[in-house]
Length: 250
Ligand SMILES: [Zn+2]
Image (cartoon, rainbow, N blue to C red; front, top):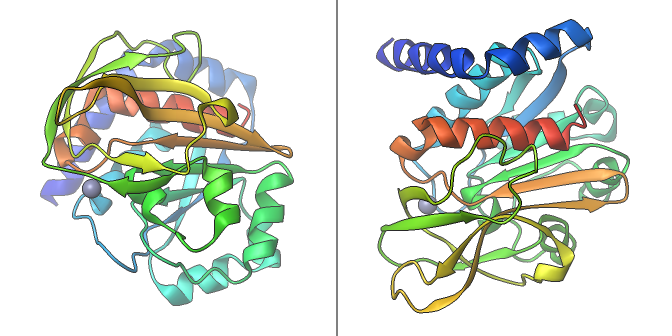
């Protein structure tokens, strides 16, 4: 109950801030999209998963943009990712998933995304399917390592994107900051990044959030999402809703 009350209060606060956008979407009369939230983990299991699910559900409800279904177990994931079952969804969110997930059919899943669906990846979504190059290529990177949690200043690479709308740089972020491999800046559209290593402070380019298009599919990945405080923060909700909206072409 405590968790529900807290989420409802946060969602209400966010709805006030996003009031103009919310009424615009409702007026457009579009049927809400349907997103499948995948929370299955095979290696590390993040304690922030329930908080993320609650936050995403709240964003969808408050904006009227989407409703959610959840695949939390191997059986649910298998049943909800058959080619037939996927027809019920407009996209999928990998909510701190890790390891090799038992999708019903990997090739069909990839083809489904490329047919014009959305793939949203949060934090450990990049720690998923390390042995499946096509997925890493689709997402745009894979998790390499992290050190101790750190306070960083996040820079906005594209302030005009819906995914960063309303954000003010630099964004102060205290979280577990991932570093990536298999990342090629030329293959993605950058949204957020760091200009120094989160732990050593050494100058460089460190990606935080980006989008990609593959076929007709749209991919949005964002690195924050380890700590509950980050999940609950106003800017992260705004960023997440913008990314989901963009990936759903709404
Ligand atoms: Zn983490």
